[in-house]
Image (cartoon, rainbow, N blue to C red; front, side, top):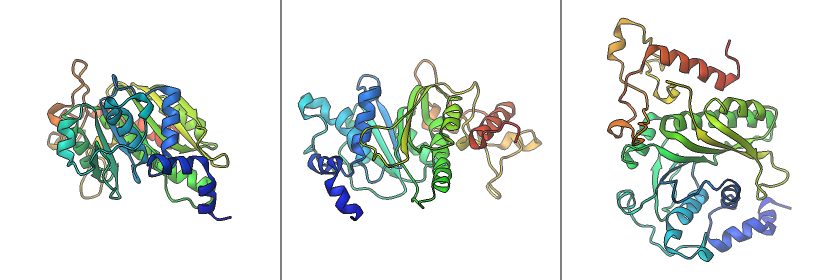
Length: 305
């Protein structure tokens, strides 16, 4: 039996079509929220959906945090008749909760969602996100991205781990202290190590497989709560680099004064990122070295490598 025939027999596939979701993966986010209650309208005002295409998770965010503010709870997650033709600027000005979806692919518009067609490994993308948040960091960042599957589990797990690292890099640049990060992973021998690594940044890290994940799939989700990075940590996305060879600039050299500032500051009073740009505060050489060691551990699990 072909894949599409199986899809049509799948309960979540049929229900996604019924409710107007673009993919059955919408129910994974809904079920994760039922367990962890992170889509709280009183606490979440700035959300980023990384690797968002085709947009089912962004649809859930919009219906839960924006559209359902004006609907009875019985209508939750049902298709909205709201116009999807609003510009990013209009959405930014009209909504109390700002949702930004990022993907390399272009997506069809989603009511209430600002879309950025960009690379999550680029600092330019991070700057754009923060500009839409008016200089404030995100409360919640989610990522349902996955690379093309080869069928070789070890290779797929490794390639996906690199995608997770890219998501973590941008997350550590734009997430507020106390914020939440959720991402899809391929469960395997490296899952426990990834959990330990993420505990460097988050006080609570949970690995979970929601009911809507296919039973035969290695897919699982990591829910990271209460973002609390090491003191003076600098996201790798913000490290000063030499534009000619993409290497980290030697900040101990005499030319270090010319390096652009590159660290994010979450102000304890108003949780703002200065000047709506994450390129403002000075990069201390000691802090950069400490961050490099932490990043090395995140990448390969070995502080001595």
